[in-house]
Length: 118
Image (cartoon, rainbow, N blue to C red; front, side, top):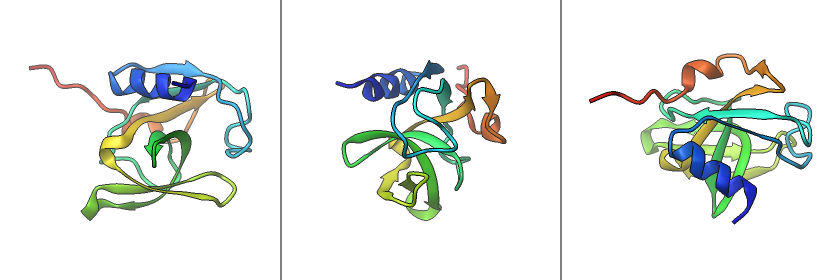
C-alpha cells in the first residue's frame, strides 16, 4: 500500500491530512513535493476545476475533476496536462484539496464534508 492509499484511507475516515505528493502531472497547480492539505469532500458540491483525492480504476490520484455527471453520481478525473484517467463514482471521491503550501484553493472550503451529529 502506497502513501496515496494511506492518505485516502485517512481522509475517508474523516481526517484532514497534509502530505507532499510527487510527480509533475498537476504542474503548475501542484508542483512535486509541495505540501497539500486535503479534507473530506462532499461529492455533491465538487465540480470541474476542483482537485480531489480519489480512486480511479484501482489507483489513487490527487487530480482534477474535469466533468461531473450528477445523474449517474460520477466524475471524470484528469491530470493538468490533458490526460483523462477515467470516470469514478462519488463513493470513491475521498477528499478535496483545500490548500497548496498554505494557500487556499478558491471555493474548496465550501465543499468539505461536514459530519452531522446524531
